[in-house]
Image (cartoon, rainbow, N blue to C red; front, side, top):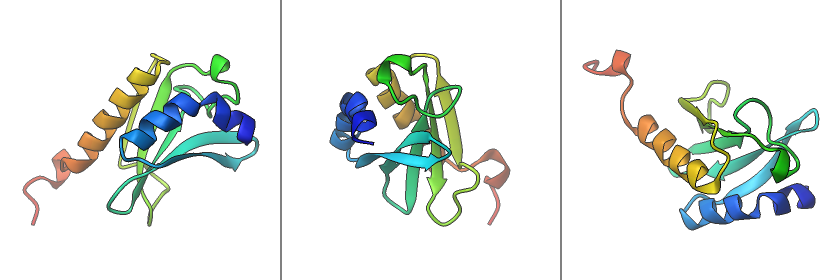
Amino acid sequence: MAVGAASYAAEIAGLDAAGLPTTLLHTGGGCTALQARCAAGRHLLITDAQDSLAWSRDAQQGWAVGAYRDDAAEEPESFHTTNDSTTPALLTLVRHTLRSVRQPRAQDRGRR
C-alpha cells in the first residue's frame, strides 16, 4: 500500500490541503481507490475513470469521483468522471462532485 500511496502523493497532498483528509484504500480483490473524508458524514471514493485506481500513477487514466454517505455507501449521491488525468483536473472534479451533492436532486425539489 505504501508504494501505491507514494504514486499518488501529489493528489493526496492536494486533497489534504483542500480539507479532505485522504488515504489509499484497498477495496478488495486487488483493487484500490483514494478515500477522502468529508464533513457531514460523507466520503469520496476516487478511482480511474474506467476502473479501479491503478497501482502505478503512470498507468492511471482519467478520474472518477463518487460522493457517498457513510451510513449508506452502496450508491453514490453524486458521481462524475473526466478523461483528464492531471491533479488539477482531479481537484476540479472533486469540487464539482461536492457542489452537486449539496444541491437537491430535481425529484426532491419542492417536496416537504
